[in-house]
Length: 386
Image (cartoon, rainbow, N blue to C red; front, side, top):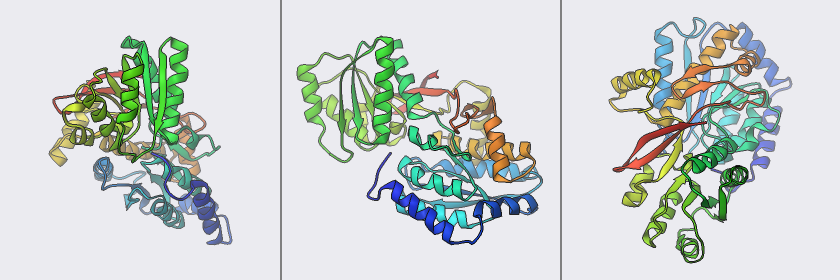
């Protein structure tokens, strides 16, 4: 979930320069002053790759918007969502960020999925005085920049990597191979996993990176099979390569358990991997079979509206809208700085994807991570970790 053709820091610098050139006065101050006096619609942007396997975020977002508006809106005002598809493009995502920032009625943005888009767009939103709430960007660096209005609704790669090391320990894996995609997402996960594994006595027998789109992964698999003793493989990557790697491992006779982070959390894993991915364990931040009353109630509403169960993206989208509405209600205003202040103070807010609270950097704290396993061609709920 990282780099494309254009360096993200160059895109961010160019975008902020363009934004600054658009006005003779501070755009953040203009937005705040406008929000302080506003009595009409509350405008929130949504930027996401809606045509992808994780594109169902909009279903959850739209359902939450409908519920809120039917109940009288937020602060007695109608909530309006502006939908834009970034098409997995850093250029498109930055154009959207610039467009959103120029809309002085827009106070917050939900998105994006990919870290390579979130990294360059986060400073644009921060500079423009808008709240950014991401449900997809997990790289550690996003919230290490001193932003005041950027929030991450999912655990970071460091949190997930450490949790997976603890999970490996609980499964009594003693010798684990780490295969990670050569980008910031994969490196974050691999480093966090290995550092925690070393502390708790799980041996990382070997770790190797691979290039996304490389196509042939059997060489590394064969090398491991011929020369290493291992009882599990941790795969820190995304799709479609993750499914291809698992197929390659199984085709050459590697039968040990394989577990992966949320980059493989999609039905596409089963479509691409077929029988080879049976038994693979994957992290997620939601599963419709999570045994809690709030999830059951959400499922019932979602099925009634869409005639199907929600997935992780839909659940995160639903939580994003209801969480923003909660912060606005607590702040008694839509001024972005006041919304952000309420989010920073938040502790124990319960959504369908778990409890939420944020630290000073905008990281969600102590949010549960769901472990799911592929059985009979679909994800089944396994357990919850932290």
